[in-house]
Length: 513
Image 1 (tube, rainbow, N blue to C red):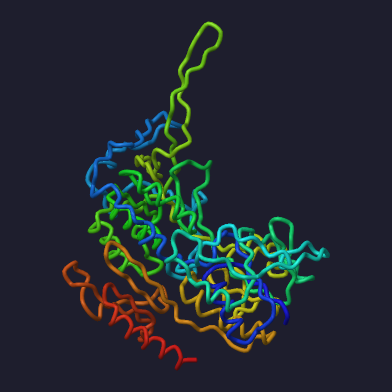
Image 2 (cartoon, rainbow, N blue to C red; image 1 turned 30 degrees about the horizontal axis):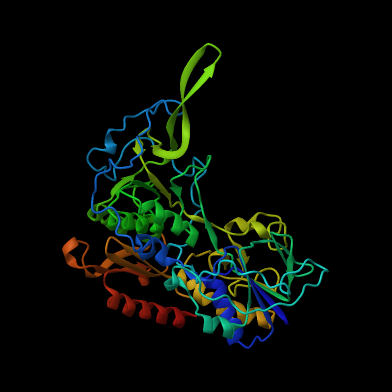
């Protein structure tokens, strides 16, 4: 194998590059990234990075300054069917009533999560402006001139996010083609097509294109954010550090919870909307979900559950138009979000809306290839065997985009441990090893650290083995059991106990193989 193409300058992509060199591949190595950044660390984006160096507006500052007026009932469409009194009244509780219009009903639901955990993926330093090397990208049949393959230096204003320093990048000796996404894969010529019409031809391909944040349907409105990429985080941080804001977070998953926590720390008025009766039930089960709901309340965020989102309302601006002998005033949408309309008719005034309703795998560029099979299977991730090998032995997939053995997991372990197995199988041109990483993720919310490892069958029971769920218990360690055996552990502010339990789980997993 003379040339390997890694599609995705992500955490998983970087680990694939490292593994290729570590396992002896000394040929040409090309990395294609849709973003203009070198691999960076994603987990801090919703935590320390979002809070940023700015101090924020201060705790519970007045909302009068710069706040956008709540829309009236005649802003757009029919009037809401329920009053909005709950917006400024006592904090709603999890038993919020009213018909729940789930996100699925409005076409905005996240795909069924195949595994728990927020996206614990990452990329690295900013390499904005790094041009593709001309000999790495060429139109099929058109030779390109040779240029340097030296990696870009760290030019980001967030250097702590970098996953690799300049020395390591130089040692890896890869060509980084950033800022141009892949648009197709020609399995016949083994060429990765780029959005600008060029192509890269190789002998092997590692797919590490990750996942993209889901958004709400409808026209885009200023003030509405998702949080997945560094550029997303930059835009949101700017919005949150320009004064006190009424923030509505749609989705009570890990990204939503972490973002809400950061917004509370910055002093904003925060409401979290979750369509399910409790947040994080699919990931942690109902018992631990109750604890997570309490984290929001104890942390200072307002949590609304059991109701979906019907839509977003823009603000209004007045316009005067003159026609012959008369003048009339009209109000038109100003293009900026002013409220979130819930399925039960309530309106939540909002200056900033953060949509955290899950992610979908970045597989559109692979449609109509052998990997799709014409059956739409890519919507759930790139199908792979247990060794991360696709239907084509010279193509492997890793990280958030890969559906390994029928499971797509957005876990840190997927991005960091699958590449070793995938690269070994790629270089062997067949599956000689399978990936059996124990899923692991963590989340920081309202001053507490949650750590989870293992698998949680729906039927699993959970018991608190150490500490307690009360605020003055200083955290706990909970063990999930299925058919009499521990399958997963969850710890809150008990890192030592968690590490011990995680080691034991890994030992059990290894012994069972």
